[in-house]
Image (cartoon, rainbow, N blue to C red; front, side, top):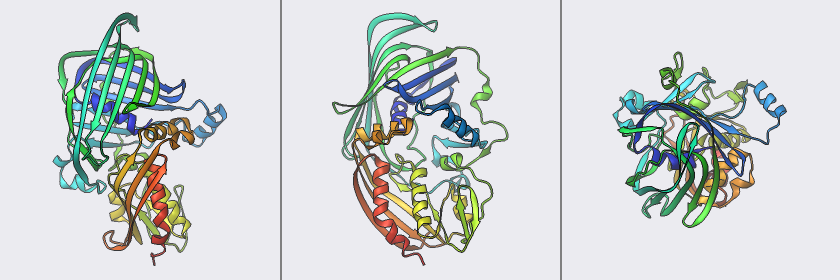
Length: 426
């Protein structure tokens, strides 16, 4: 499950993280009992480790075995370790033995550290107001040896009209059995400046921050305005309060640090980026072609799957008889000998709530239809730069309004201009 639902839930969770006794909890979130994700949370003090794995019931055992034979296995998101005491989050990829640190405040880092980051501009515009409260039904029962209460938790996010995405109201309702695993005597505030991932962000205003505990079983519904846009079932598989190893909440030994989330998921070895090298699925084939770098997107890009979209541009470049190379870090761009660089600035993104939910669970269930619900609009500018990554060779704006999510809209806008721009590379 990716970004929209997780971001909305986290928006409330990060306001004040209580000091907790050690515990481990595994939960499954699904749609209509089919597809979804299984998340295991480990908590020790103010540190938390979150491991998430996609559940794909439509995959046969033969398909799973084939994927594992190719070294891929079932889809798994990077491990997320929140280190509130150090004011940072750590994302860990155990497969390629690498990690990425997302600092709560990137502005405090040394220039050398900032230079390795993708060029991502942060814009503060408008406000987002959050409010959460719950109603106690009075019903009680024992679950996993804990005192459980039947509650209804309501969380509302209201974005102002002058924000980058315009006015909107999103409401989440959770109703089910809640338990308290926390000690309320202390807390670790983790409210932070705008994300280091760039893009346009509103200023946050917190009205109320209710803390009913953790829902063990029940339903979660999402609304845009008064319209239901998604419904999910949550089931707890296991709860343990055994003492946890502190090493679970630190960076593993002998793991290498990388400069971005993209590099974390697609870490590569030494790279020959000469203009006469074609890269295809990690291999290189010599030929007399130009290698074109695809840079990270700038502007309001935090909601997009940049990896997917930059790979799409790469395929267009390759289709035009050149070699498209989606960089993983600014060090690759600085150290390469690319013939040209392609940059995309996201001027504006707007999508309906239905497309947000459809895109989220289309990835989980593998259903293309679910990703096409609702509509989205994208305003972008695609630019071809010279070898230095600064001199503009050609540039063109594009606007697309499609049925689908933000990624679909940006892809449609790219289609409008990419062929004409690539024809201007000499």
